[in-house]
Image (cartoon, rainbow, N blue to C red; front, side, top):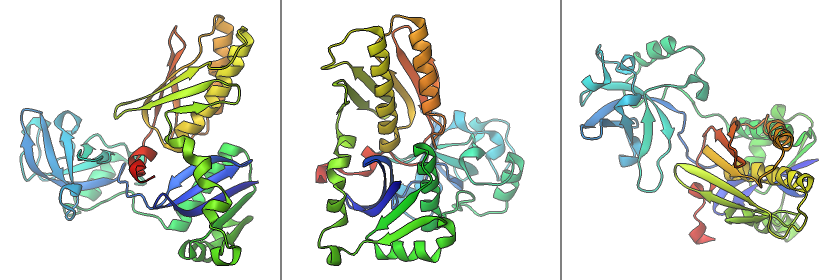
Length: 345
């Protein structure tokens, strides 16, 4: 059975899913992430030296509502207030249809694109229909990805957990009264799911302590992650690239089969870390080199099967001669590192 804990974790309302006492799902529920949202925006000013523009897509919020739009990523059809032949004709004051491709981070404003990916939104229609709807809206309006209820959002995460763990039996435990009440009110979303309220005063022990949430999630903030075999992963996360290096560490055996099994173990843990840290974009994993082509084929086949149901569409692109495998993964929310302030830990 999977256990889903919903509680305040590192100052955020968070869902943490367990299977066999190990964290398999983590989602920060109160995160304000606009990635994938589609807006009708207004061009504030042009940056001719960068061939880009600043577009305000939310009326309030100061700089929070302004994004950076490269003109090469703008389809002229998405300039809504007039007909132009090229994005180079864009002017301040123009009304444009944009999608948030990368959420703001620290001092960097959100990055926008004019090449709309409808599959990343909840708009029910094609591009022509989207543009038609956008022309009926005023600037600063969001026309896609309307927020869903907390209960429905939690239900979707639980469904993903069931798929990832291949376990349909689920139990939800929360110490947040408002969350518990909403889940009970929407019990139709949670058929065959047990929902339990954890009363801290009655139990005389905080929920986070009862389930050892700090110790069971501390590896998510570490650069080095140890494996049961004695090997370890080194995880480097940058703004543009994520690197995971598999090191044989304390492992003493040197046979081909052993290293194949070690790489499979590393793949399982690397995928778990990718999922829980919510890594996205380009991901490179440097596995221990295997000498036989057959061994590499077995590893690739194993990984493809492992990641086939990833909710953010983790895709294996290619494997180099040095054993480095390239992946890409969709982005829907900020990574864990961007969300949790580790200075307060």
